[in-house]
Amino acid sequence: MHILSLAPTSFFGDYGCHVRILEEARALQALGHRVTILTYYKGNDVPGIRIVRTAPTPWHRDYEVGSSRHKFAFDILLSIRLLRVLSRNRFDVIHAHLHEGALIAGVLARPWHIPVVFDYQGSLTDELLQHRFIRPNSIAHALFRHVEQIADRIPHAILTSTRHAADALQSRLGDCIPIQALPDGVNAQVFRPDVLSPEERAALRAHWGIRPDEPVVVFLGLLAHHQGIRSLIEAAARLKAQGRHVRWLVMGYPGADFWQQIAAAAGALPEVVFTGRVAYPEAPRMLALGDLAVAPKLSLTEGSGKILNYMAMGLPTVAFDTPAQREYLGRFGVYAPIGDSEALACRVADLLDQPERRRMLGRQLRQIAVHQFSWERAAITMTAMYRHLLFGAALHPAHSQQHRDKTVL
Image 1 (cartoon, rainbow, N blue to C red):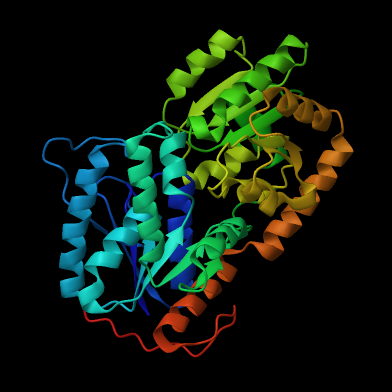
Image 2 (spheres, rainbow, N blue to C red):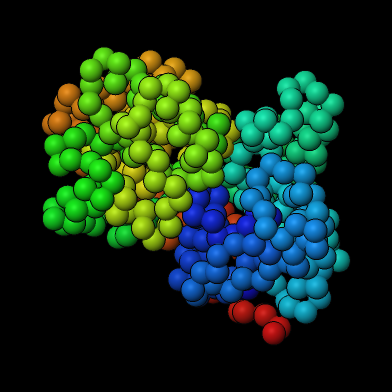
């Protein structure tokens, strides 16, 4: 099959949503399918992946995409580019990411009668609220909620990043649209505990000013409010005030300078180290510096794919108790109530005091990541959904006869 992956974001950008888009494309290509990613103008190219980009906005070529009013212009340019791409190529399926992708593809691809699969990664309205782009109970809140409801109904099928999201959508939409959970995956051959030798680990720790005997807590992801960065800083400050010497390696972007100021005001420096952006290929080496990981995400609807990287690295993980994070970690996770930085600090301290428990949890979590969350399994699930829409095939994660590639170049 030839699959058009519609990504209304600046792909590739070294964080969760983009990792999902990339690894899905790689896994589909490994099964013999062809994937073209259509995305915004800005972003990093990835070897082995065909990427088509929009034209830049004439008035603002250098931007950080997030919840921004500029996204309306970016999506118009993406829509124009989509029409040109569809008129010149033949695709079997459009795999649309995020609600904007589902809306754009669901409307504009109709004349070509191409099935549209919506890759649902969380509530649009919840994301806008978490990013403080809209205010609760405002007119904008009501408007975007309505837009979200339309986007949820316009595609031919929905794949969700968590089973919790699939159940929630199923209860709201009923059986009018096929809905299936497609949890994030991880490449356990790349993310593995032995990625660094003891000598390399000691040298890389020294590079970041960390002594060999210091316990290290790692976080890797967007430095956004809804990722719980403030709670992480508060937890670090609490342990420091208690006389606990713990280093916190906080890896990600944007706003590292802003969060550094917050950490300084909280008295959490120099224990908290902000590394800035970490390129995706470097993520395993940086995570290997940790003794345990934290996942203080506050969102109740978004997935939490970074946890699978922690799990594959054999890192015991302390997380806020959200449906997505419990879905991945299960009974081998260590949980704190959402937003409770004091409980987060206590759970981290308890784990640091129990090295044997840390090792046991790390082993169990890696086994789960290896056996249950491979991207190969995800590709089989995606292919089964495509075949269901194209041929009426049953929805089950099994290989079936390869569909003849109908691409017109």
